[in-house]
Every structure is written in structure tokens, then in C-alpha cells.
Image (cartoon, rainbow, N blue to C red; front, top):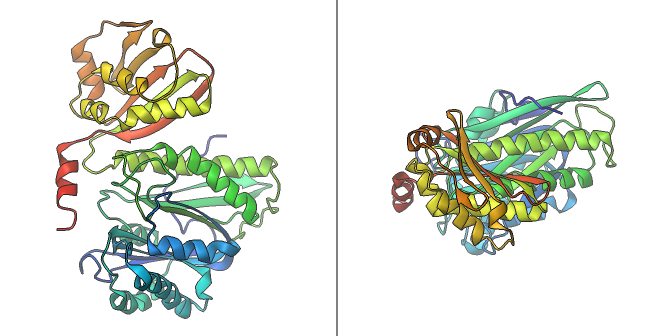
Length: 406
């Protein structure tokens, strides 16, 4: 099925509200505290960073989700609350309890996330002062404020929705993400909050989330750095009133496909908005012997600093692409590979049957000057196809990260 990606966000599904306010964690002019709330208890699932150093909010959310239930998500930017010891855990729990008190919820039914500078204690008194206006401003239109409140070096809000039918019932999935730096395929490597009014069991919700993350958030990279605070959360309140999805039938596959359409779109938005980036770079490996090999090869290309800088310089240096394929650790016959590069400005073939292919440098520069570039790698060794997404590497990436704390 083709799912139309629409304007909207976490409040698009029935029964959800959101808000975003400034608590002063970044500055008085920038929103930095977000809240998502469902009028009904939700089946919930999460996927978390594989970094051994995990932020306090990750640990608290993992504990709160042990029963697969939640009704609200509170998140802040400007401070990661990571490497902050027992006090950090206490502050993450406090964020949950402060919201729970005003929402008349059990604190364990509130999930928490943070993003920002590592190793600095969270100003919980500032959060405490902001919780009342945060709760009081909850609304259906609040999804953009919530999205703004979780942004750090992001330059654009990443918020979308999609709708589809299950047994004549309209089901909606809404989502927002933040992520621009410290992005690398190893779980979600950012914050992603997904809401849905689908009626689905917690077990299959968890399965659908993991399957979608595998082919979306796990296939992007900006800078090969896996963050300490990454998580992707999905909460489903069942208000669409579709027959409950509790087995892997057609309804499950439709829901799962819709969810993947959402996460893939968001993944591409994050890669394109990489810190300092000027373009989205997709590597599509086709006709590979198996999915795992195709993914390894595609990731190797989008993660290569030499490929990324060539993309920034609009230089069709295809040797760097072959180099990245060659050290990926996958066995292949280089004489079978066909390489090409394309964009909305056209396509150039650069390598085939073990030899370079003649192409116009002027055409190549035109192709590479667009803000979305596709690197096509035909392995001619099977039938599997995998795409991974990254961005170019620019001077501005160094500027942004050389002064991140100042």
C-alpha cells in the first residue's frame, strides 16, 4: 500500500494533546519542555540506545515501560541528564511525578526523555516551575510547540502523520522526532515519539516498532556517533475502535507498513537535516545476495567521510564509493558491480564490469548540486534491495560541534 504522509503530528490521532513551553533550560526565548498526553491509557513500546552509557531518562523510561503501559511523555532539550548519578535518576523520576500529579496519573505511567549537554545536572526547579503552564497549555494544536521544545541543533521541525482504514475504521499514526547530530545506525539514535489511535496488543505494537526501526532509524547516519539518550517510543490508545490487532494478520501488516512509512520518512528528514548538511545522500544497494550484506554495504557508503565530503564538493569521486564497499567486510566480485549517481538533474553511470565509465564532469556537477542525491550500487549477485540515508560533511559540522557547549 501507498501511505500518504500528511501535515500533522502526535496530536493527529484521536485522544491526544501536546504542548511545549520554555523552562529556561536553554534560554527564555526557546521552548525546551514538551508534553504528550492521551485521554486514555495506552499500550506502549520503546526501543533504546545500545550505547553502554545511558542517560537517566532512558533508564527511568525502561523501568516505567516494564508493564507496556503509559499515558503521557514528558521531554526536555538543553540538558541530557546523563552521567549525573543518583541525582539524575531522581530528577528524571521527578519530571514524571510533577506531570503525573497535575494530570492525575500514576508517575509510572509517565515516560521521560531528555536531550542536550551531557554531564550537567538538570535544573529540576526550573522544570517544576514550568510544569503547570505545560499541562495547562495541552491542546490538539500543540504538536508544533512540542516539536520545537525537543529540538537542539535541528534546523526544522520533524512532525508528520498518516491515516488509513482498518475494517472501515480510520486509524491515524502521528509522530515527531528530533535529531541532527550524534546520529548513527544503532537503534534510533535520536528521540522519536509516535502516537496512534490504533487498537493493537502491546506485544504486536512492540514487534511493529522494532521492525520499523530496523529499516528506518537504524539505516541513517550523520556522523557515526551513537548518542547516550536515544529512544523511540510508541503509544496506542485504541480510540480508532478497530478490531484489536492481536495476531499477525492482514490488519497487522497494514499497520506495520504504515508505521514503517512514517519512520522511514522521518529518518530521511533527520539525515537531510544533519548538522551543517546541505543535502540528503541515499545509497541504494540492489541485487545483493541477502539483506544483511546489502545493509552493511549501504551503511559503509553513507558513513564514509570521504564519500560525504565528495558529495559536499559536488565531486563524482566514485573511487571513494568503491573503497567504502571494499572495506565493509562483505565478500563480492568487483567486476560485477555497476555504480551510478542520480538526482532530479539527471543520472551518470560511473563504473561497470570492472572499468570506469565515461561521463561528463559538467553533468556530474549538475547532478551532485541538488539537495537530494542517490548513489546506486548494483551488485548483480542476488535480489535483495536496501537503502540507507546520510548527508554530506561540511565546514559547518565542525563549527557547530566545536562550540556545542558555548
